[in-house]
Image (cartoon, helix red, strand yellow):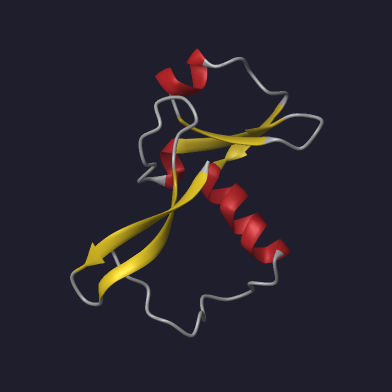
Amino acid sequence: MIEIALMDTEKAGWKFCPFVFCDHCHLKIEDAKMAIATWNDEGRVRHFHKGDCSRAEPRDPYWSQLNEHLSHTASNAGVKELEFGFDIYDV
């Protein structure tokens, strides 16, 4: 799941930051290459850490690597380059 959290960043103080959380363990996914996105025929998307979390849930029929899923999602929303017009903070 994607959620917004209020974070105290070193560079910019308090900011609202989007994060991807595992739909099984509910911990933040910090490495998109070590996670997957799954979806069913109705289009419901879920996110999981690879390994125990992804194996613990009933399997959706479709999946992709999370980094690919997020890249395709951004592209489909019109984001073509990493030119956001704002600073990206590492939190």
